[in-house]
Length: 243
Image 1 (spheres, rainbow, N blue to C red):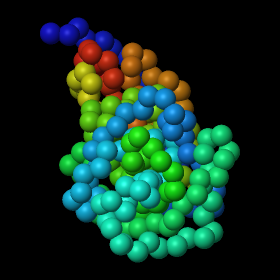
Image 2 (spheres, one colour):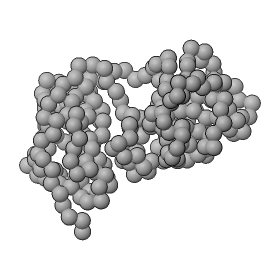
Image 3 (cartoon, rainbow, N blue to C red):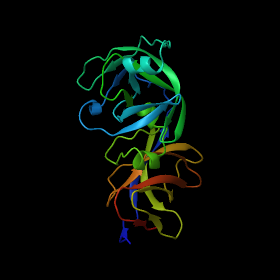
Image 4 (cartoon, helix red, strand yellow):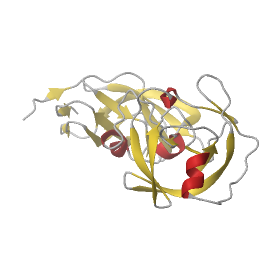
């Protein structure tokens, strides 16, 4: 049995009031591709309307793309929607040409994501699809960690916020210790700042937690000073959180 670790009772977090959901292809008129266009990046199988496609996972991209060549292969003679205002740039600043976009039902690691926008680009890649943040943000934290293989060092997209920021301390609610098994994601109820009541907030850590623990950015509701956060344990050992 792996040995148990303990961590400090209190950690700092920040609470943010979430902004409204951006459009499927992102809210900015200039979208940057991440560094995973080159080098080693994890891949997974994505089903587009039931058709399996291998995709590179890119947490640095706000959009999901597929090559024009592969799109024509799996959806021959399908029409694309046009979005002439959109400019897509690579990490090196170069402009990426595209033919248009389409909306489709996607399945990633068993999770169905309906009517998600996919950009069709005029480039060739060994892996025909790039899975971007407009899809990754819809996945549960445990799927992101255990099935996509992303870690706390990756920029995992969750609902973002541009409202007021409240920083404060939180403690595990109740009087019992909470066990977080190795390589798992655990929902933990904590007590925190009471300035916001019955409001949705985005919770994330403002400092690194010890021993391989990470607070996943979580959309939750504050109720009577309590809120639920996602604790990710990336280590091979269980960790106990003290109240």
